[in-house]
Image 1 (cartoon, helix red, strand yellow):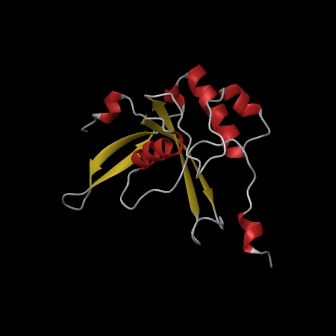
Image 2 (cartoon, rainbow, N blue to C red):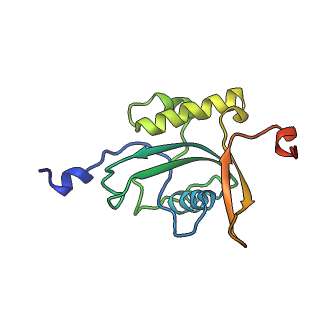
Length: 157
């Protein structure tokens, strides 16, 4: 049997900001808050890029872990490092981040996905969000999906 310390040991690697959602907090709001808390960068949620699902994650309180990767647009650029969560914090070139061995597989793959989006158009990768009324009176839900052409969005028959 492994000791808990061994299970929680991580390596220093470049990664994108992230963290846990607060109860009742939407994905985009969590992403904006976490980016600001860790880097001091103000940003706007643009889209969902991908989801990593992992079971038996040591920091997931005994639950399966869903790591949701969002595309953000910064509105400020001066970094203010959160020393409680980060050793270093800096802007990195995506092509360099995609190739460096000093990162996680998730980070290098997301860097490649972002490079593809910049080169070929984010419409090919983005999952946008739309809010719809729930079947429960007064409640709403968010649906994340590839953007539909307008003639399909407004279809009535």
